[in-house]
Amino acid sequence: MFDIYQFLVHENKSPYGKSGNPAFGHMNASLALRSKKTQPPDIPDIPTDGGLMRSEELTKVRALDLFADMKEETFDVMMAMAYFQAFPPHLHLITEGDPSDFLHVVVDGAVEMFAHANDRETTIYVVRPYSTFILAASALDAPYLMSARTIEKSHILMIPSVDVRAAMHACTAFSHAIMAELASCYRGVIKNTKNLKLRNATERLANYLLYCNETQGGHGVVTIDIEKRILASILGMSPENQSRAFSALKGHGVEVSGNKVRLTNIARLKRLAKPSPLLDDPGF
Image (cartoon, rainbow, N blue to C red):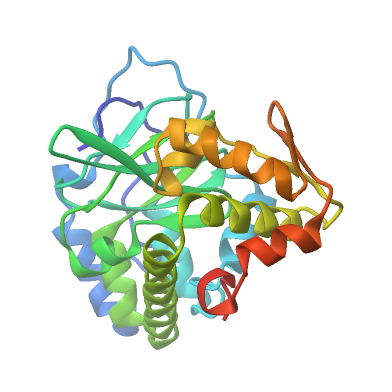
């Protein structure tokens, strides 16, 4: 499934012993179902520096909405089956169309989700800590609809999908959390589709800058922390159209210097962008 990596492998044993806990029938069954396809391949030529997760990292993973209300024993069993590894930049992690063997949690770094069709490639979104990808495929035992590669050095926790599905059966709270997460993702897809269809390139870029300004402290200075080609793809435009959009925004108080963007007239920029919670607010 993965193009290239070397993993730290954990011993596949349940802390409940051979008989297991009756409440964990599905979890115990999942251990029997695990096959070679859920064991990451050993490719020793690639230098990586994975290791055990630090307690503070595991605490942050536990605090994710997806895992926060899980029963402690369910979470512990699922984590015992997981792999934690460091990956270098620009490493291909998963390929669209492949079986969804793992649910991934980005603990450190950044991962680009992208797709191909008709000799074209587009970036769908960028995943940063502490976030998961791709939950829907893992829950449904369906193929990945996107590919993924690291943008920078990244630490990623990989939970075998078979164990994710077993935990869904074992823990009602986890099932509810998955339902809420997928519903939120669906609403996000609708907002993004509306953004692409109802706004032109300049308006999309303006709203992106306003959103970044809000999330980066509201001081009128935005740092674009991804390559501009990736940003252009996320916003549904070519790099050339993105350059033209930045030029068009100069008259609305936007000044660009490298990866820094200064917003000198936010009120004017908002009049152009017309931000709306129905398109732009992740929590709406």
